[in-house]
Amino acid sequence: MLENTLVSCPYCGESFETVVDCSAGDQRYIEDCYVCCRPIIFDVSIDVEGAFSVAVRSETE
Ligand SMILES: [Zn+2]
Image (cartoon, rainbow, N blue to C red; front, side, top):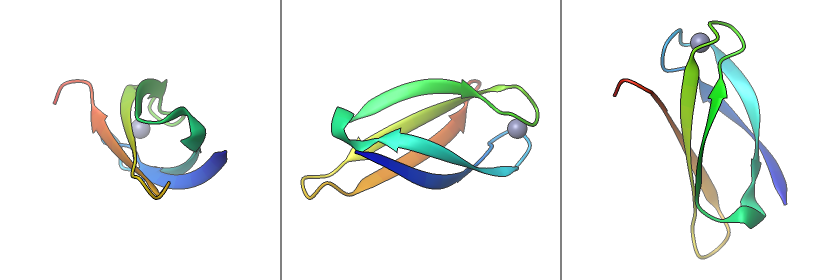
């Protein structure tokens, strides 16, 4: 199950949509910001009811 969600780049603050695969469970992945090209770490958590939350942080944090 794919869900779109809006996140903000931790480096430049730009908001953009990303696609989360909720059927894959908790996951962590890195995607480069399309604006500043720096690597953003995505932490995805899925709760028992299937609701998801996405936390983004910079590689240096
Ligand atoms: Zn950025």
